[in-house]
Length: 153
Length: 153
DNA sequence: CTATATTAGGATAAAAGAGTCCAATAAATC
DNA sequence: GATTTATTGGACTCTTTTATCCTAATATAG
Ligand code: SF4
Ligand code: SF4
Image (cartoon, rainbow over all chains, first blue to last red; front, side):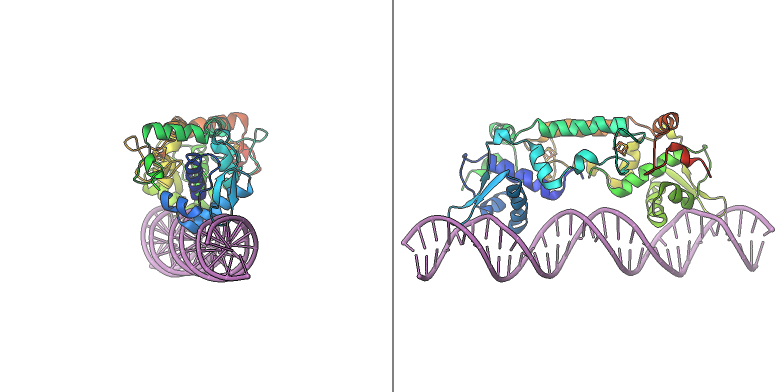
């Protein structure tokens, strides 16, 4: 698997937040309901993203979670790095430790190209971009529902 | 992680076999020593590849494992499919079940491109190709040693 | 100040992945 | 045919990932 399940959930949650009015705090409970993710598990993931400064949280009534900066300023890569770490950028097809250009394996060159493609995609894609696309075409963010289900309260 | 550890070991082992004289059976013990992979674990992985018809085994003295067809006829993808299954080709960034063009998420298009890049790389690379490159440049297939350590008995 | 809503965080449990061990089977050689 | 070399395949353990549960801390509203 390319991304851990936590990371995937983190991306979904971030997209959801980015689809909301800027500055609004969304309770985790509501997010977990909408996104069909276990509340407690999602809580942990959001804690990580909060700790990394990508999200901001607020306790108490009317509290919840929101993006800490505008969605067009958050790359998918930010979220992947916060949750899965650098794994994706440093590990490799043959899994030899200390990989790099100095002491490569025969797959190194080809793999590096592929890895760069993944990296580039994640770096060049922002939350807002995907949200706009999702809204325009009513794409899905959950198993069944279209993008619009995120908005009925 | 993109590929499971089993898959990575399977690739290393297959490359090793492809570097050997065609038709020669190599005992698993020797392979596990050379490649620094647990004998018992490697055994299980090779069993999978044998079951899939990629490798061929022979019991008893002078027995071992060898490629079932010429190395230039084995794509990396064959090995990945045999061990990790279709995961890589069917799963996705947002992990929504039943992914596809019919009911996509906002990431689908970008992700499909990236996935195709990975797929293409694995499909367009053969064992022989990597072995030749490895031999020519004495690249590594283990943590420390160059490609040549595979040949001292 | 009290009741309520909500996140924070630790402890624990279940599931999957990675790795080990051993007895059974098959082939070769003497 | 007995002995040795190897693979086969099942059972088991260890570790990491995924998921659940419970208590504490914090903020709001009345
Ligand atoms: S492709 Fe590069 S990073 Fe991957 S195992 Fe080979 S040398 Fe290491
Ligand atoms: S990108 Fe495509 S395959 Fe991946 S979750 Fe979205 S719809 Fe599914």
